[in-house]
Amino acid sequence: MVIDNSETSSCEFGQPERTPPKFIAVEGNIGVGKTTLAKKLACTFNYDTLLELPEENPFLERFYRDPKNAALPTQLHFLLQRSQQIQALRQDDLFEPVRVADFLIEKDQLFAQVTLDADELALYQQVFQHLTLEAPKPDLVIYLQAPLEVLQARIRNRGVPAERVISTEYLATLNDAYTQFFHFYDSSPLLIVNSEEIDIVDSPEDYQQLVEYMLTVTKGRHYYNPGS
Image (tube, rainbow, N blue to C red; front, side, top):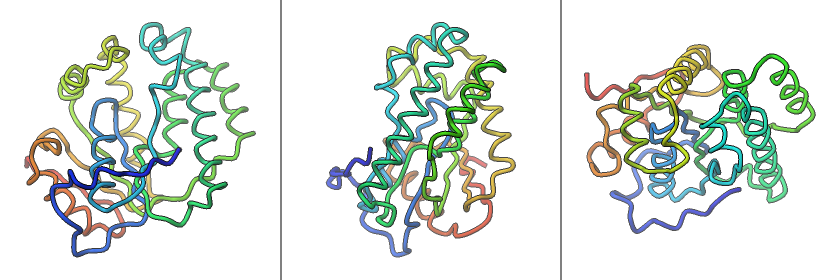
């Protein structure tokens, strides 16, 4: 579902001089801040948002408590949800307008490979192949990274009940999977951000510096490491 961003009054600064990418995707592990950044970018650029809807997945809390038995329905729900989102884009003819998303469609397969056993993954792949999941390619992908202890602290601070039982082992496995995925990613310009020292919520300067650097990325792979 595409959600119109209407929080323009809370933007820290106005439209930048450089032209922003038409379609931005923000990715990263649980708790890293991808949805927060996506919403702030939408506010800054007056973009629509295309957001994940984990709160609508009835299996997610069950999965965090019992990954082995709840992984398949959790992943299939996310897959079907994503298919519906993309179909809605097509029906509304919204492939051309500017937008920012807090996910890549390829991320669904990444999570499936981490959470499913061989038989479940085979079934998942069969369903995936029968769905039409041709989303528009981002003009820029922002991959947010953070150490495990930072992710855990942010998860605690945001206080989502279902996330309280997420294990350190699961977060570490996802961190490794994301690192592997983006090591080979070359489908769009990529900005890899060390978000450990960035406070985009309470520090307008941090956010503005990130946006200004982001707008210089037009091709290739770039790293933003403000703490170094």
